Image (cartoon, rainbow, N blue to C red; front, side, top):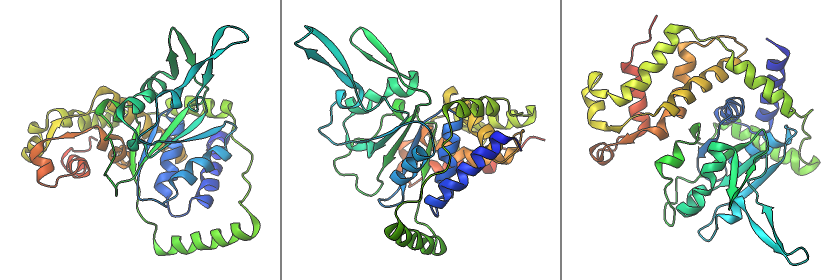
Length: 321
């Protein structure tokens, strides 16, 4: 294990001490950071979604900003707007909250589509265009958006183009009893002593070096063939399974293929290895694929979920030797 892997291993442990019982969320946060992508997290209120991204920001040398999405939010409230300065007679661009290293888009589906789309360019191109000018975003830049699956009244579902910009869509649930007990202990401790101080922050240079190391993680041709087989099966499901053919309307785009490749490498690297196994691909596939699959009306009417499709794919696609 390299010193850089040890640094991120320590970061993972530090986050796990703050975010108890949400191992998958902590791991996916780091994978998104290492793979230079964005994260969509769905879970009930009170499951430490906001705390997780804030804890990550506390352990990075960058800055953090939270945007609470509401129905009356405007695109300029996210990206910024031009302000007229009477003393100079000119317009000056006032940067919005998106100009931070880590951005929490809280309850993103509460805002209408025109506000959600304000993040499209920022997430995809790492820049914001206003009028005739383009402003680059700071590096590293990562958006973590949250959705509440319980209350759907007054929400605006994210369009497919927006969903495809997210590297992963992570579903989180309630912690186990033992973890809940640890959460109680931590809450009491913080009530008495205050929040635990973070360790030495990871710098932007270390993040960049780690991303380069992740890109160099070895993937054997057989593992790559398995990865491609999973993706291609979503586009031609009839060749694999009759049920899948009735469930799937559209499969995964090439952006999803790239995302699965990057996330598999990042997962292997976080695990202290310099090579990817089929188990890495299988472990990360649900989070990478679930929001990129478009189901048929019959599938939705029959109660079939994207997770059901992914699980059927993992069962049916053989692991190449």
